[in-house]
Length: 155
Image (cartoon, rainbow, N blue to C red; front, top):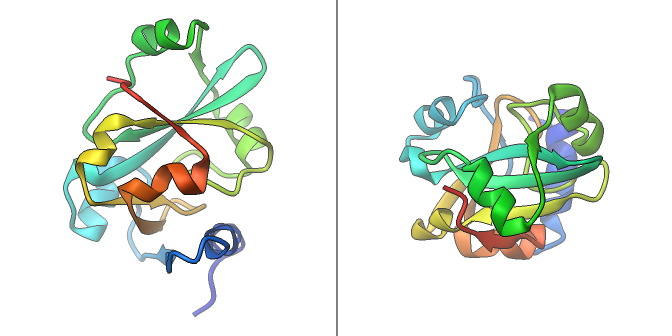
């Protein structure tokens, strides 16, 4: 079965790393962290929530453990910059993907990525893959490699 256009774009990006990562399109929704955890049968904390924020006109992507909430005040202080949650239109314009399906990679425009330190507590994590029913599993230690992301305490 062939992948949808968005999921195929994510798969093509992942293939360049030689990590044998495979996008899976599921029959059930993976739009929320709980939906994704239920769909793949893992702990909520193993789900990578892709949260698009902005500082001014610059996009930021936070990859946050499904069990955590992004502490906007703490992160703003850490980054020494006021951040605010992006609306769906800005997120789609910057990433090329809909909210609930934003992957950690293969974005439309360059985006600075920050990775929740708590994701590294798990050997394997699951991330969105371009649609609200597509995911891929990855070793948490490989997230910085594929995203060029910076590890940060976000909660």
